[in-house]
Image (cartoon, rainbow, N blue to C red; front, side, top):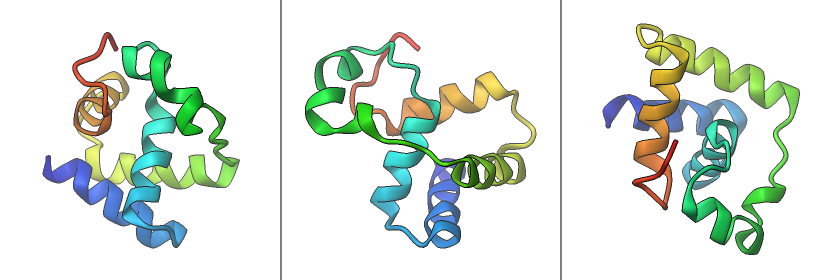
Length: 92
């Protein structure tokens, strides 16, 4: 999905992190812990312990508004989660 890839690239540049770091951060931002992957793997991979700062939230939301502004909040989350969650399909 081109729009999600664009979000990852912009996050990487704005926050000075790798694309994989941006993927993990964005996934943590949108993940609500309902999928099987989260229940099975989040603790062992350290994903459940990822903390997002207020500044990171501000940057993520700004980029999402700019790149996916035509979608509802819920549709953005579903689209992103479908693309980046290693446990897809999930129950989100």
